[in-house]
Image (tube, rainbow, N blue to C red; front, side, top):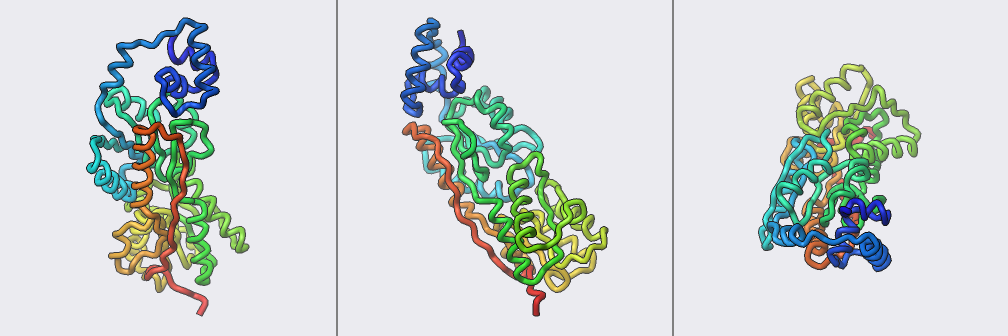
Length: 336
């Protein structure tokens, strides 16, 4: 009998069974009792040699980054590296395409690197539902809310993406804009893209402003180039946009370049607003209006939660960090 067989027998996840058998503190007493009784009834015995090998694995912490063009994650990785450098652990960072399955990639890396814990930067909750049960080490999903998932070794630290996008559209509407285009990500592969899109729709509905997803929305990858291309596509449909909301700063920066190349001025002809708060935005001309996430706090709490789980057996927890709306030079009022 294997641990997977025991998991099937008891109805608990593989990770929960593994922790119970290894006397890990992060297991409920009820689950521990059921699992140990089932193991005794089945004559299950731990492979001591395998257990000893696991106990002597490296001091590696793995960071799985979903998306190669997202500069927010680049900034976050730098913060995480600085934090981990102050500990006894070693950091391994793995970048993957935003269309790939981050959980399957992590499973492969677990076999190769034998990490003590994993930080996921970005993800799709559907991938976790399907495959995360095979991962039995502490993990933190960063920028995505995993509170609706039921894994006792998966924590999360996130921003309220739906509310952040809603506030961005509220800001533009408050400045008098009634014809607003939105450039975002692929909602089928990114929970963040879906939530930010839903926040936009919520604001439009609350203010009674028409929004046609077929005409007024461009779903692309998070990169400068795709922000540029999406903006050119929007301008081709001859809609009288007075503002564009790009749901990531990298998209907004590409948007500003595309507008300039088309002979349009920002914000005199069209306002542009982003979301994330990349430092680069404050050095642009004009300064990029954005909804700023607290990247340093996202990184700090994610690392602290992961280390508490690794070292103290702390239970999974889910935190939301605040954001700030910055109405800077790339937007203007048209109500005057």
